Image (cartoon, rainbow, N blue to C red; front, side):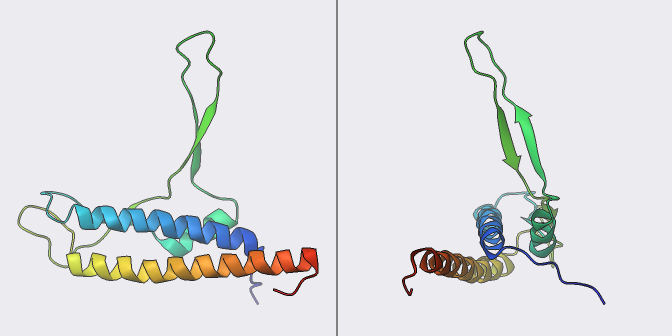
Length: 138
């Protein structure tokens, strides 16, 4: 029998909310470019990216920042970029654009509801922990 991995609700909620927000940006970009010739609709596989990030197999990349002066401080930047996939078009347009506005709007709306749910879940987790810390009922 496969054991279901247990995740801390706070880190789960934070990771899910970040990914939902990122997916919202990707879907919004698709909708914005629905009339752009040769634009290809993109999306992420939310479930697999969430699972990978919770297991510590995230796709974050660390980039070194360039210093152009001896007095600049060296540093790194973390780029968190889940693997973007191309959406398989139902019927691509003649100009090569693969955005189906109905599909994108549906996914955008559904993701908005899931984002609100993730925010509510995370808020409840924080409220519950604050209640436990202070001894006050929430």
